[in-house]
Image (tube, rainbow, N blue to C red; front, top):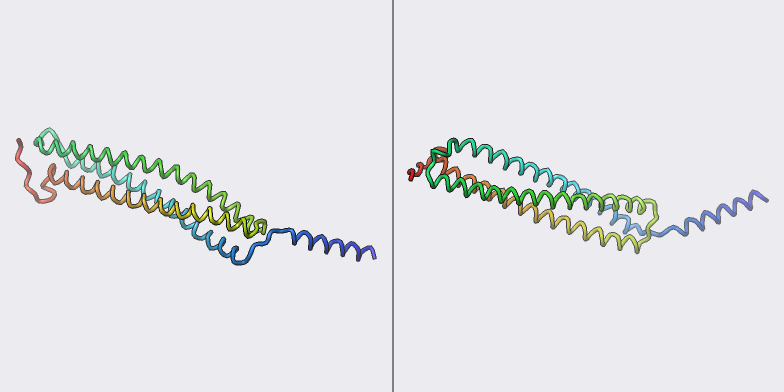
Length: 193
């Protein structure tokens, strides 16, 4: 009899304990799990974009070094050639400053995303354990969805800005080399003044 009573108490306690857990619908669980994939992709894309930015910064530095070598002895250049070099270097410095600013903004943004990713992962662990109810899950997902959309929009803006900057620098370099080192592109050298 005592064993039956203890068994009954255990069953009642189990039922009471499980009925107190927040209820999360299968639909919400699926939404959260699908979102994990989107969030992880965005986070990976953000990291890859940082690598692209670093690579482009290195490329511009290498291009500037190469241009300097190709110019050779600038003392022998015409006034027009020297003026073009000065203009090019001014444009290159402005582009370099934009890249540095972009890198700082990216680094700060990435830290924020990394912090949010940690919080999101902790939260999804609670979802997986059944510690979150439907209403709070939906509210949290609205916040994370907005952050995901904002991050994607920010990356698209940065990507366009970086592409435009790199294309502008390539044109800047080509224009300069056409004036300062015309043998490379088949044009005649301008007469010295």
